[in-house]
Length: 210
Image 1 (tube, helix red, strand yellow):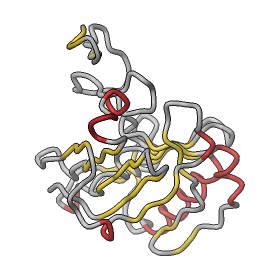
Image 2 (cartoon, helix red, strand yellow; image 1 turned 180 degrees about the vertical axis):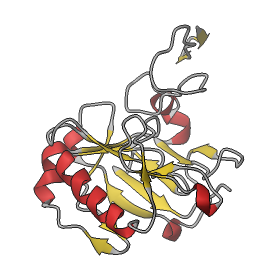
Image 3 (cartoon, rainbow, N blue to C red; image 1 turned 30 degrees about the vertical axis):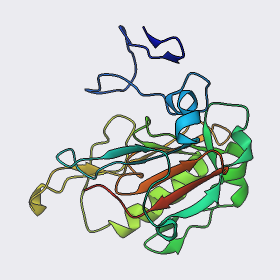
C-alpha cells in the first residue's frame, strides 16, 4: 500500500522463512525502497538499534544521530566487498575465545566476505572458521555434558542439573568456505549498533536498551 505519493510502505500477506513468531520485516538495507533510504533527507542516512538480551526486555530503533557521546561507539569502515548490493559488509579479521585469538588464516574471512544482518538469528561462518571455534568452545566447556544437536546447531549442552535449560552454541557453518559469512542478531544482542551510511562506517558500543 502507499502511505503518500513519496513514501512506499508494504504489508506482507504470505511471508516465508525462519521468522518464528515475527509479524513482518522492516527494510533497513541500502535498497532505494528501504526505510533508511526513503527517510534519508530527514535522518541523514544514519540509524542505530539495540537488541535486548532477553524477550522480556525492551529494545530500541533510532533514526538520525544519537545524543550519546561518540566516544562510547567504536567505528570501523564498511567492507567494500558488498558495495553495489543492499547488504552492509564487515571486514572480519579473526575470532577470539576467552580472550585468545584462534589460529584462523585471515584469507578464510577475506575469501568469503561478511555481512551484518539483524534479520538473521544464527551467525554463519566459513566451515574452516567454525571448526576452529567449535573446537575451542567445546574444550572450554568440557566439564559440561553435550547433548543432541538442534537443527543446524551441533554444539548443545544439557544443563538441567545446573538449574537452567539446554543451550547451544549460536553459530553454524556455511556449506563451503566461499559462501558469505553472516554476523547474526544473537551476537548483536546487548550492543548498540550504529550505521552511518553517510560516513561509510558502522559502530558498536555499550547498549542503550535494557
